[in-house]
Image (cartoon, rainbow over all chains, first blue to last red):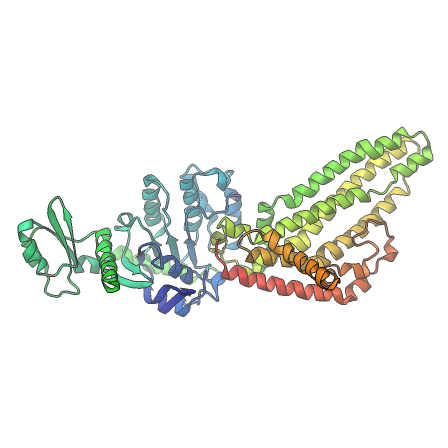
Length: 296
Length: 303
């Protein structure tokens, strides 16, 4: 069964279309990165998936309609919507009590185990904790839930690099077990590059790229070309080109352009898989360029 | 690698096939109410503080005055003096707490964005709003009663000691005190709980709806309409209608509701109160407001 399945998912706020009819299928056991520029519709799409907002179109999460069955869905789904959404007045032990009280899948001992590794004391109140510690606490609460889908919306926003690294490490080591599904949105794409199994780019409410990381590796190729060979390399129709230290870095889409293969490109220089960040700039940047061209 | 994966899959699949059963609604409700008391500690701190001040006042005021009087009959009268005023102060504090509680209950969680945390848990909006409404309609009146009762018992004990110390009888004091407590309970349930329920529900609704200044949105429109009606038609029909819905306790509980008079129990007519249409209209309006608040909480995200 697909963990998330959407067909024609659409959400408009007045005249602004935040999510413009997306089709989406996330299988169980995947870690999907949902990447997009600000205002692309990521959070709106996630809100629809989490039952926080009504929507048009078809959407099933773990076989349920999230808008109609949010409370039941939340037995199997958990999310961190943004950093520091834990209420400031709540105490750590109160949060543990409450979670154990209302959540059938919450394992208190497990949460206390996670907290024991941090500097958070059960007598602390959230308002006394630093931003990083609040996220640690939230993650400890969430990871102690035996959930099937975890949704993280910018979970590491505003955290320093140590906490960010720790966050993904403990997510992978202590939580992910190949049967759970994780959906994460972030602007810090470099950090999730090696965490993800699937990648999705979203721009202006539409999905512009949807592939697994294996597909990404076989499909997108990047090569650094010396100035004298740029002309020839451009003949192969790269989707994006940027300059670095006087040399050009060309990015090719082997899926759209069947003529490209690794050996052919190897003639120009070392062929690599592009980073998500570079691919993002290429795909989204091209779209922006096209839109501007159309506007003119 | 693939071996480890395949051996891990059935195990975790099993773990998920015994998916945790949904938690009983009563349990979610219970914890939702507890969570409200954690957040809004003024619910019990404010009445306790007022009771503390009242006790202090009683100690140096009433007791001091009584013992300073040499006239024993006068002393007895002073020491048996009803402590209604102190009870009224505690109740006033509770009403103020209720108002601020209701206006903040669904607004505060959106303002501090904690609502995203609460909504990430398997508690329905219905349960959450119902818990908040019961805090205002049931919990606060009960807390008020317990605090007031404890306060009056302490006052009674102090008076008894003073009376017995003066060689006087305290026989009149206790029946009086117990009767007053029974009336107090009725007053709190009938007026603070049932009759004011539409007001609390209205404030919860505004709290769920307003983006800012819920206090103004809750009260200003009524004031403007009432004054407008007075200016335009020189009448108070709108204000009277509001009073009818909110003050239904005045039908049957008029002898005590809203007044500090020490009406004997025989004058209270619960049957009359329960049969008054005003009460039932008020409760229907309460249900309507709460249903709207549930819908609003479901639709609205953080501010």
